Amino acid sequence: MIDLTGIKNVIFDFGGVLFEIDYHLPAQAFAKLGFHDFKTIYSQANQNPIFDKLETGKVSNEEFMEYLHSFVPNVSRQEVEDAWNCILLHIMPEEVEVVHQVKNSGRRTFMLSNTNAIHVAEFERMIAEKMDFNHFKSAFETIYYSNVIGIKKPYPETYLQVCEWNNLLPSETLFIDDSIQHVNGAAEAGLVAYHLKPGIKLHEAFII
Figure 1 (cartoon, helix red, strand yellow):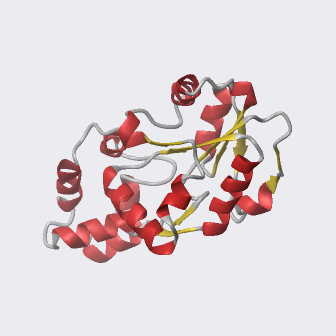
Figure 2 (tube, rainbow, N blue to C red):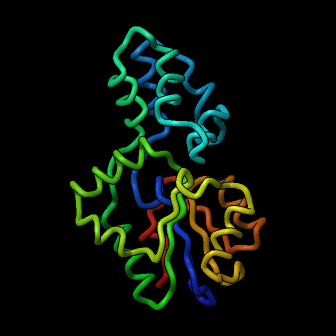
């Protein structure tokens, strides 16, 4: 369980914590398009450097889509984009309410997500269809997308930069993520790090 005793700030991951995703779906979608080795270039634990460049805004959407399209040149560009976006399932409104509860308890709340402009456009659209997007955004003091800030998890300096930007003490800051490598990076940076394990939802893990 997550105990907030002594915690003044909480940084939440997005995918897998607040928004349901399935890392296996893009591999299945690309296999249907004819590319059967997608897992060799992209998975939750490891990925080709071009994905890192996309997530830090160092490669354009167009260049990235051309890269993916090169593996399945006989299908449409839209089919490639749909296969890439199918990792995104839906926002979990009950978990957003947990963030509001944490914020209402007097703690500062932030979101830090490794993502890319293609996914951002899609999941923000999906959130707005499911709930008031302003209600979602207002749960956080600041939302940090890796492709906008140019740095990403799991590097310790990323967490320390977020702390520096907001005058947070790492020892008073809780970080929550479903990817163990990101949790380990936050712990290395001196934050209080919590791994939200598969099958456990945020609202099930909190003591507020």
